Length: 394
Length: 115
Image (tube, each protein chain N blue to C red):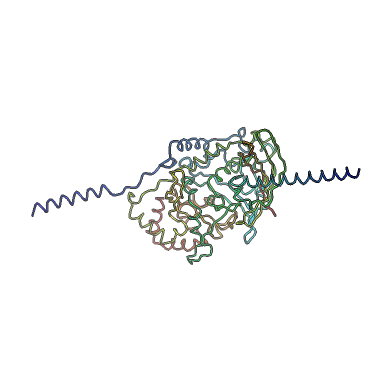
């Protein structure tokens, strides 16, 4: 009898030890700035080559300008590592005629208004591009991080559209709707979700931000609609090759998402878990959708993978206090839900960096987010701290 | 004399008709070839998804050598999902491969919203 109890106790203790050892551990994650896990050798090589192009500093002699915002992708996307944020804020402008007519002012140099000029252009008395005379508003845009954007790019359109509710049929006060690019494709990139694909965004960033012409955009951007003076552009067009565009696209596409802090390993686990509950209770998750899934891809690292983006990638009315420019179908007060993926690595918040803390950003939510903002304000300090602690794990 | 004038007129008319027909065919072929290609980038970007987006295509200039055909074209564009029309200028570089041609690059020269 005593032997049976003893043996039973040993077996029980052994089982507990085995179960503890078998507790699923969080899967391995790539470090910030590293490539996606699961890339093959060739893809890793493309990532490495693309990073060189991303970091390349252009000069006027090899294509920079004559109007530009930065001389390299990594000049802005640099903190805390390449692919991250920057302290630069750029200027955009467009023309809006209520109720829904938006002109991006391409013919007047819009919507990106370049803030720097090369010495040759300065010699013509031009220091920067001016706000177009037809613009009804201008906007400031902070630099977003691009970690995990390949995964975002690989989310099927239908997954995003499934969250649309433009007429608020479910009466929750949230009416997300899609923006579309000029050619009708579903947009997802940019603060107004105006750009359809990661490739489009990366290819267009060279002329828009660095004044570097590409095979897809072989002519210099105008200076408020006027062609650049011929003696200010010494480099032949296009100033970057299709191969380099493809390489930089591969770098961004293969950048891993920011590593998440797993709750079960967190030293303040209970507070973080409470914060996650609060995130849902105050309906942050109605727009900041925690997770989507990529579709089938011939890149294994992008094939049917979870994406913890914390965004529905749709436009929402954020109220008049945050309103700035229109773009595509987006009215001035409409913004794409910001991706909270990598939030803890950001240094400034909201589309123009006006909020210096996460709490400050929450407190400036308006429009469709007013209810959630008020619900946050009504929380106990303990629950506010819990929510912020949870957001600090993303 | 009268017969000669008539003959010249007929030849000229036939020449114009044939040239126009050939150019129409070339334009239709270009429209088909453009599908799947993208020009520009970011905010100023157009991916040709169907011929119906191309309301009008005009060949402004064409140069040709042994290996390549380069077109300068004017386009009137509109997608049915977007309320606005756009005027675009583009450069299409085609390479000749086995008596056929294939677009090697498509560059957006300018893009403005039509009034």
